[in-house]
Image (spheres, rainbow, N blue to C red):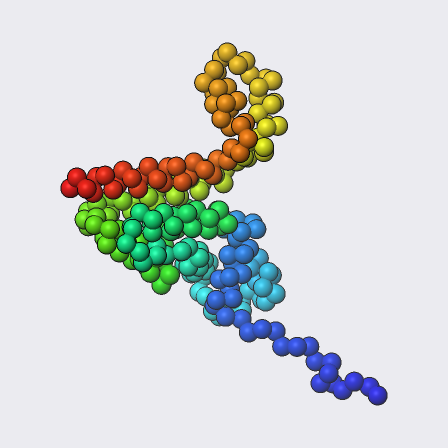
Length: 225
């Protein structure tokens, strides 16, 4: 018995939505970077025609707005606990982890003229955490700027390093040591041999060290006011 025409019909493709487009754009940017992302490449990745995407979003800028909001939605909000430093620490560590997955997003996080709901919710939650911790409005502004400058800057630096652990760096360092006179750069050689190449070294550990310094400094300043 021959199969009916209905049985030969291909299953309907999952309906495209703005959320699917944004998710696809984030995934594609993770692979090729946001600068290389185009509507045509996104359409190919989503197996649709470019004009189909324009039915849901007007242009690439709108897509980027949604992508940034999607990244903000992945970052943990500071938990509602009495210890504001612990809450901000948890949120900051989450932000670094998320930005490590989406390095293209770092320069865009505070650049959008039309921030989405997740972005606004995130900022409001962080501000509320700092205010509930006893920081004045002015000091909250200083603290938020300082903390995020550290997070974004660290994320950029970490993403640009050719290696981040002592094990990964060993071969590269061996080449440098062989070609560079140790007596010409004694402090650099000291740091490399006595710290970076020691078992367990990980550049990522510098993040929590720096974050703790900032939070402790802010807390001491708060108590003096």
